[in-house]
Length: 531
Image (cartoon, rainbow, N blue to C red; front, side):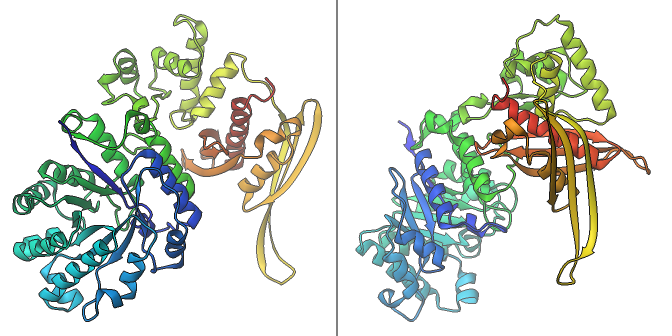
């Protein structure tokens, strides 16, 4: 019979400590609902009383179907009772199913950081947990600096756990607070704790400062931990926390773990991993990590001709799990390393079925290699490749013809005598036989050009309402005054779709315009405009 593992997500608290991350109340509600649908057991919503956002979140908590909403806080301060500690009271009174309190489990931290006696710290832990239990809350204890404390004084670190356990804590969470403990040491220490505290529920909270938070968490599970804490996409301060999505996939798809353990997540929910990962990035308005395990856009991407051919015959050759089980997809990238089978496979993913002996395949492959010699790169600009292929097959309408464009950059003083730089772009184009003159200003020449190009596309304008430019990269391919420039543009729409296009020219504005034009054409084609 398989043992049950319990997942505890700390994205809304630990994740908010990530540099550059600041969740609004709506963000927190949206993420909480996604986690609930995914099937995690606990959602740590934040620290009520610590800031207005977290207090408001718990004042009007989201309705969750499966997950238990958890409030985070600290054990009471020394010198006052649990009932008279305002910070603890805010956690106790929060509208949450559970509460997780953090307390020191390191002799050094108690004596140097808290500057209290070892017994006072034990009393703080015991009385705080007992207060939660008396209020009918499920109590969890985060043993901060546990592994460092255990190395220094094992008995005192265990005493901290005993104090929480005897007061009624459901889970004793061993925290690798500075992220420096190696997996083999975690496995050894958790095993020793398990043998000393036989009836206690043990958990693991790993930081990723050595890049091993997932490995540390799995090591703890092997040694007896049955409660795992982590964050979506590994968010967290410094180098982040254990990536809960990677852990879920490993626990469900790797045979040794899948045979021994079960989660509150089924295969249907597992197929939502990629969606949840990208939803978080969308909320944070940042580009997803292409190379993230399981959920990255390149996690199942194959570029080399030999690899691509092999993976088509036997996906297990270069893929350790089928992409669809985690909601991802295979990508056969086209480059100057590609062969006929690679191009056929890529076209097949677009729904284009051609005979392997079709001469158009040969011509397309030759065109790709010719263009990559000139500086184009289609392994990172799949939308441009799809357009190239479909145009060769006569499948893409001529949405618009650009007759001319002009960009000027002017530096001048404004009405307040402040020096400013203004970029203005003018684009003249024909759409359905109608000549249009678009003029727009922007924050720099490329932004102005982008705004002018799609300011008015006549009958196609409505298709572009949710189109946005999310990333722009420039690479100089050759040196000298006639350097060739490659521009990569990443775009997105309101449906959460992202695509990349490429342009190459000795003129950076011209290269940018080519990439921008491809981006618009791809959006129109995907949405069925003019078809």
